[in-house]
Image (cartoon, rainbow, N blue to C red):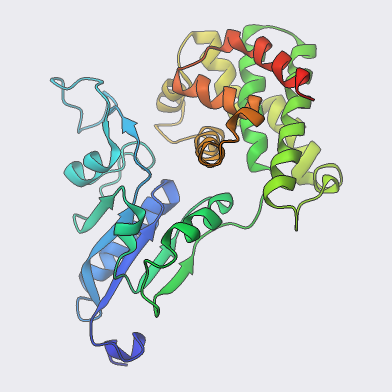
Length: 300
């Protein structure tokens, strides 16, 4: 079949954009870019990858670490474009040089005929609203997105429980964190997914209370957060030491949920989610948790 047939009669080659650049998004981008390079008769070789811009320090153990730069944070898009590696979300894997990391979503999707979505499900609506009116009328979308999974937020709570356990504050403190965490999980689910998520979702399925208890009792997010506090290091350092740089689901979800809430001016309505994000980013300390918990209780 001719290339133009795929484009509804359009004469140009396909242009592909990857929307999302986490671990899974970067992996898909690598595969797509390898294929566009191999099939130049069908595709433009360059693949745009929308990257949520972050300031990232290249780890010392990375082959791209520059002693003269040290741990000075750099734009993630610049790191990807200069070194062809997503050192934060897919460390140690070389990306094809025809991938272009772009911090502008609108610019990344412009004139693309194929959009490959790799985002947490809770952000797809907002992203689609941003690209509406900026994509070709015959552009096709491919989803690599998981369905709604309320258990993702349990990983954020598990980090908080790990922080508390690492401080040795006891079971009552951990139970308080789990209670507030469950309240925020329910609120988040009902506020943004009210048509499909109800209170019973959290109490009658394994994705709710049961998953929360399991995650906060010995799951990987809990264990890594506890170790970070016990050793006096950051969770990021634990990820580097124990997980070979692989990101915990809780840390990634905490950043993504916080970005989602901040964009709507709602981050203060979710004090525990926000506190975990702030601790991970170093703007708040674990010792601030009791005050944050008290604020959450006052707001009930």
